[in-house]
Length: 444
Image (cartoon, rainbow, N blue to C red):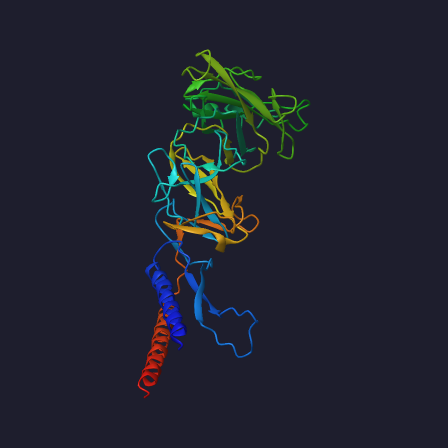
């Protein structure tokens, strides 16, 4: 009698319900990949081969296969949460034992390691102090929370317009040709002795800030004979933290002189910073904060005026930047699509801290699930192919987000109804076979 077919059908339907129940229970598990029960028919072996009238003896579970399809991406408030959009797995390390996961819920432990809830460390390429990634073997990522070192100012880039209509400071009689000019000595505290000024903060080697204020004074440089056009020049004076710098310009205490042609374009800075920098001058800043060795010394800064003009319009500054900065503390960090972890510091600077790597497999279904949203590599899965995100078959990363379970809850509920009906139908075949057997036993 055919009790075997009905019994195998009951076992198969029961297994299917187990898989469906597991999928439903993990509908809210981050990074979970739903399973699918797959079945195969069963036939008895025959020494003489099978005939066309052979009846099967039931069904069996051929495997439970996880479906590695993409889950929805949900945003979170945790900057350490990372979602994979595409192929690949996070590569995790627990005391050297490597596992793989799609669950990107991470946090920092007390040592600065990026870990999951089970304490496994996220691995990737680690950056050195200069922000250069070591792209050899992947290693556990540790976030260096040390202060970023300060950088001494080496260059100031200033682009401005000096008003050509301004007169030379001093007593002037413009009705005469040439005009009678009695220049007054420059004084940083007397605005009548200069035409324009601007300021900028610079930094020494310890990150101490110093304010440099620059003053621009139009120069009496009348051409000879008087009927020829005059060459217009400007003296530049500077103070550091209110103290006048004794420069090497043509005028006492000036750091240099800017010369313009009759089109208002800067032609030369005198004396130039170097032969290769004709439009820049040297700004020698005294430092007495212990920023360099010996303590009381000076620092030369390249003061570049390239792009400065002298037109008949109001004084204006369109660019006034410098390349130094103070030390800074790590304020936050985020992960880019390519896995690069970039730290933002309180001094406005950023630095590369590390890069997350992903791993993929020729046969992901060959991975062995170990629980806790993790898998391990097997001979069936093939070796891990490790690389940065958005390369090869690897997906991209989304910061402050997680990948939802790919369980289709509506579909699983429908599948559950179907499995229930299959179970009932197989139970009915057993019942029918029992009734047939009972009829046979009752024959006299």
